[in-house]
Image (cartoon, rainbow, N blue to C red; front, side):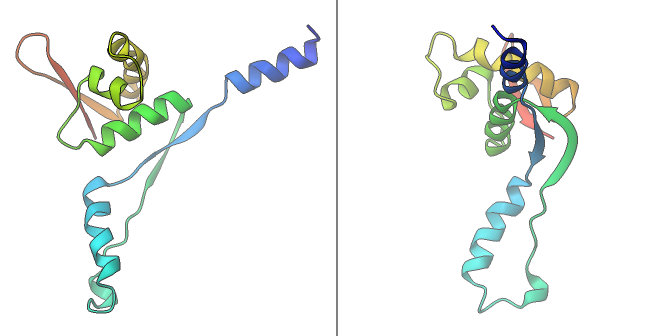
Length: 123
């Protein structure tokens, strides 16, 4: 394999994207406000701002973060994997690697339930 081709392949594999976390509660409130824009004064509207962090996430980690943010009440690793389209048998193990990175970067919070049950919530 040519060295230039190998470098190009490695760069594609190491592709990183910036993490974006949207305020879920504000987005749910903003959608009806847009429909009632004629009746509501512009000063009363809330603007949804997604805060960008300086953390480089892989596409898989970004997908897991989006799923956790969409489930404000919390979600377990198996639920994350199933929403991402993984098989039932390997759904939890698929999500745990990305969840470890998100925990280190303080983008999600791990909550211990009864026994060995764990759920993850967005910060």
